Length: 234
Image (cartoon, rainbow, N blue to C red; front, side, top):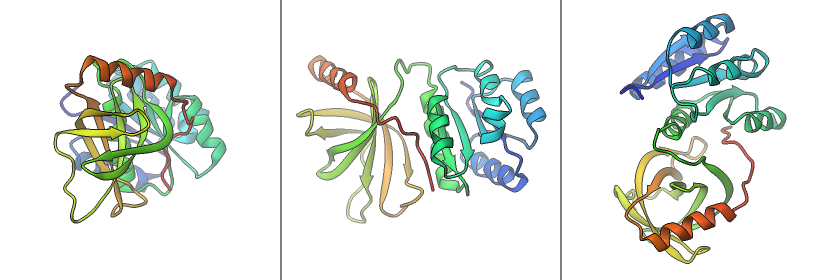
């Protein structure tokens, strides 16, 4: 992957397109603005890219998502689709392996979702992220929740507090349901768009665990039912 991930933004709304590009550029990405389906299709056909952020109609009715899947630098990278707060649209995005972002688009939600999507496309990732019905975890004595899992790691939702420091680069997560502590390396962080002052998400990968704990975690992940829901911001 390039040092600055190249993100194609495809939306017919010029103000939305410009705002998204400005937000992503500020976070170190290389955004490419397109406001027509033909221009977006040309961009993904002719130049390499790491991720597509696309309007729902462009993605599915216009065929952009299918076209972009053939041209991605890494086929594991999910698309990010922008659409209405509509259950049917969200369900279609889930079936097409896309992350779903509802309008109106806000900076925190978009940046967080793009960061997550880019992390999903790391070449070393060996298994897909599985959304689950959130369950309890404890981090540094703080009651928290795990909201998705994979064989390599997890995504945590941890309450924000003035008196509690964020987790260090490598930290322990107690999983009461599993009955073990697992060591996790922090890979990315973002606040929750709808509750920025209340909680944050932390994406992490397993690090320096014993073979017994690694096996227990993988068995646990395999047995956990997927919630089947896409990430959605309102």
